[in-house]
Image (tube, rainbow, N blue to C red; front, side, top):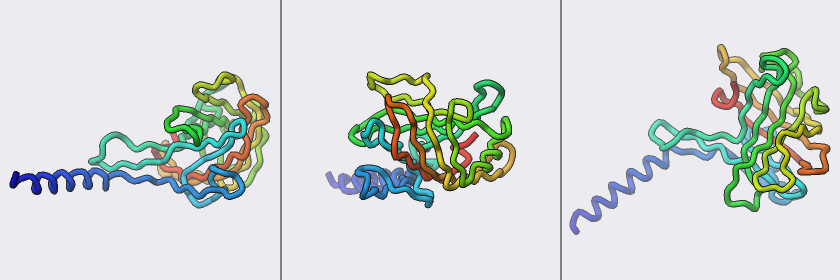
Length: 208
């Protein structure tokens, strides 16, 4: 029994050590005009929110983990080159998340943008301060909403996106950093996305 306080102190130190290796790097400020959605920002708050059929939906939090933490870091957005008609002809902005009312979820919203220059993520910089009509040629949306009776992931959804900020810098071969922010919505009537807003700091782990 005499060793109990020492054991408790030791366990507490170990727990605090591992917790100190984990950081939540998402900031949520609620939009007072759109309940449960984040404000539209350009500060690197690392969040995307929108309404799907008028229900608030948010991305997962960005959780950064150090060398001694359990598991890898997780991010709220991923950007990948994908070849749909040719090698690396589209950039896929993929947002994992869930409805605000859900405790857990494994939904995904994907926005495909046709690259101005095939296989070049840096060519996305041409869209800074630009509005793009996603007409299934210039780009499109795909959604994976688990449990939705109207879910049709492989259907291409039309819509629009405005990039308030789109800055991608090269740090070396296939190594990028930057920031993106903007607004978007879809024009479909099934699983209609409205009031979409995003604000992300782009780090090398996110974009490939």
